[in-house]
Image (tube, rainbow, N blue to C red; front, top):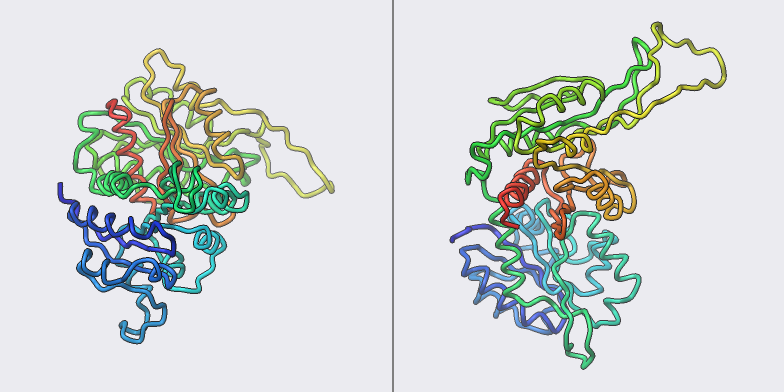
Amino acid sequence: MTINKHILLGVSGGIAAYKSAELVRLLRKQGNEVRVVMTRSAIEFISPLTFQALSGNPVHSELLDADAENAMGHISLARWADLLIIAPATANLIAKLSHGLADDLLSTLYLAATCPVYIAPAMNQAMWNKAVTQENIEKLQRHGVTVIGPEQGDQACGETGFGRMSEPVDICKHLTQVLELQGPCATQSLQGLKVLISAGPTREPLDPVRYITNRSSGKMGYALANAALKAGAEVTLVSGPVTLAAPANIELVKVETAAQMYEAVMSRASDHSIYIGAAAVADYSPAKMQPKKIKKQAEQTTIILQKTKDILAEVAKLDKCPFTVGFAAETHELEAYARDKLTRKKLDMIAANWVGLGLGGFDSEQNALHVFWENGEKTLAMMDKTQLAEQLISLIAERFNGVL
């Protein structure tokens, strides 16, 4: 199958650079256009001419290239790419990327890129196991970078352990699956299915003019509604207060409070095949709404809150429950909390994302997700929420249809 995507391959300076030549060949064989960026140290291991011959394009290595239009080659390359893969990614390069350093063309491209980013680490096993390297890897993952490998085995230094770059055929297979998911949802993977989606925040009133809410914009939920519609589903969207225009050809149910969202979802869930709980529902609501505006009088005041009903858990407990997908927005210990929520609420899937610290999520046009299900997981890199929604819908459809 011809994919015809623009793939930018970054090659940093390690002995595994020779494998990257085979990766270029395999990606080209899949119908993709490949351009290669090399660090100066990578050129010590393999000739740029090799990559030029295999890719059919000039190799880029200099940040300040007077021959590039407006001398802004890194920007044009970053905008050209549908996907950036760095293979091999050395410990040094990983450290630079995780700290936002941009002192050469490849590290600058990483910062300028808005497409999904993948790295295939390659280094000595002791370097890989070093705590600081693992911290750098975790930081990149929080920023939406997907890590492929490394593998365990014999290394060029004569030692054995984790640190070998994944084989080109395995990297190519992984990227091909991603690029297929990036394609339009015109595959009609949800054709004939009814999909219920909740989106946006809730507002819990304190008095006639004040309420408790959160920073959810509803963008992810609305993007999911559009993606499900494109995949052939009949979509019902239960939405809290947002400023977004509803997608055409869906049933829109507007609510305000957590209690209203609970009623709207529970009254419809059994009639749908899939429920995606993307809404940021308030965990607590004021026990009593004051009939008049609360005046500023005492230095301190107390508001008694009561727990709201757990929509996700209640949907999953229905006798005729849909395939239930939850969301988990976390500021720390993302995987632990997401897996606990998946198990405790008996969900079919959960999509977890970091919030805060400039990591996407609320208010952002971009996001990254780590999706978990029983005996499986998949990372969806930082990207535009429209594109991310299409990938998540494709993943949900595969899981629903028993492919994964």
